[in-house]
Structures are given as C-alpha cells and as structure tokens.
Image (cartoon, rainbow over all chains, first blue to last red):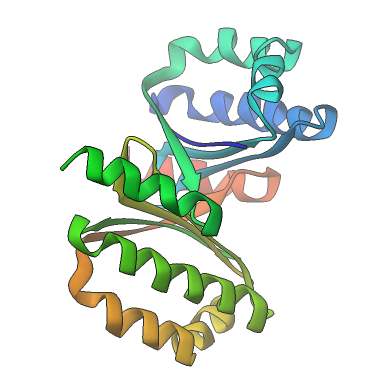
Amino acid sequence: MIIRISEIEIDSADLEEYISILKEESEASVRLEPGVISIYPMYQKENPTQIRILEIYKDKEAYDSHLETPHFKHYKTTTLKMVKSLKLLDMEAIDEESMPAIFEKLSENE
Amino acid sequence: MIIRISEIEIDSADLEEYISILKEESEASVRLEPGVISIYPMYQKENPTQIRILEIYKDKEAYDSHLETPHFKHYKTTTLKMVKSLKLLDMEAIDEESMPAIFEKLSENE
C-alpha cells in the first residue's frame, strides 16, 4: 500500500475553483480506479486555503496508473497555477507489520 | 461529523513504546465505540517521530464520550511525557455541503 498526505496551499482567489476541480477528481478516482483506496480531501477550518488530502493506493502500479488517467491529468494541468505550495508526505500506517521498519530506520539515524 | 488531523512529535527514545500504546488505543476506540468512525495513525517515512492521526467522530457527543473512555485516558496519561509537540487541526471534508462554509469564512477574512 502507498499512503500519502498531500499538504497543499492554494491562492485564496482560486480556492472556489480549485476545490470544485479537486472534488471532481477525487470522486472520479475512487469511483473509476479499483486501485485507489482513498482520496480524502479536507481543508483546515481555521485556514481554508490549507488543503490536506489523505491518499491511499493499493500498490505502486495503482499509483502509476492513477497518474495516467484523464481525470488526474485534467486536475494537474488546470490547478498548477493555483497551488502556492505543495508537500507530499509519504506515510506508513501504524500496525504490527510496519513496526520493525520504524525502528530499523530510527537506529540508522542515531 | 468531527474531523481532525493530529500532528504529534514524539521523543525518539520513546517512540517504540508510544506507538505500541497508540496502536492499542486506536484499535480499542474503533472496536468499542460506535461513534468513532476512524482513528487512523500513521508515521512519516522519512521521519518516524512525526506522527499523524486522522480522527473522524460521528458528532460532538461521540468525541466527548471518547475522552472519557478508559483506553483514551490510559493513552493520554502514559504518553504525556513522550510528546514533544502536539497540534490538533480541525478539518472539514471537501464535499458539496461544506463548500458554502469555506467561502463564507474566506470572505470574513478578507
């Protein structure tokens, strides 16, 4: 599984249009792509130009194929100029299986 | 619905113990509390001491009652000293119904 939190800041003048395009894209992805487990978009209540998206893909193939869909390409090209900043955080879910990887990484960094 | 992203930084010396307590707490919450829709804990791959939790509660009552459960109280008291920083971000899901609220808030802040 590929898990990511996208942290996106949108120009406030573009927010209404951005959200409408993002909503369309996330709905199409979950509906049309079996490998897209979740694209869950949110905005921060205190600061609505701060967007967060929890994205979960079945595997690398599902993610790569998502990038080639018409709905993703439409989202990417139409919103490019609206995005003030973009951070993609690769995450791991916290469960038994993933725990050894955490501590291996920690000891490497000590 | 109450949606929140908790951004938590844990002392690296405590991370193994913290994650084990968090995992137990999140599993118990989802299993025992019908009003807890999601407590989805993750850590950042590049920086495992950075924890993110997507929390979704049915309503304010479900959240208030969550705070009174033995499993939450155990989590809170045992991990208090392990937490280097904690930010609770109140979020809204992006959907048709929530959109008017965004733009109202934006115009208030202009």
